[in-house]
Figure (tube, rainbow, N blue to C red):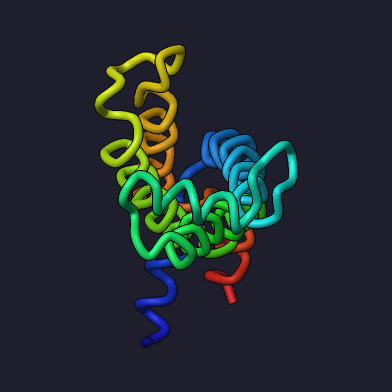
Length: 146
């Protein structure tokens, strides 16, 4: 990758709003990923998540559990730090699209019915971060200046 390409990935002219979006959404994603990968916070862990994914037709369940859990856990941590914000947001957004259409869409909009409202909200924030980047207070911006 050229220096110019890297600057486009890292540099962000967004202000404090990016930080306000990044940190809570990053923490939420990291917690959900930790549930899938490690069984933390009442989650089922990798084996349980893999079995559940297989049961709803997302195969191979183990690989998909690793991919979804990693996208959420590591992507969430990256968002909190503002490091590789755009790539992390894109990968996590893709994960939300899969969640919406494979799990939630048939339940309607509302989260109270296991609908897609929550995943859609995360998707919108992630798309916003993918477009605007991590903002002024991000590791990305510090790296872009070097």
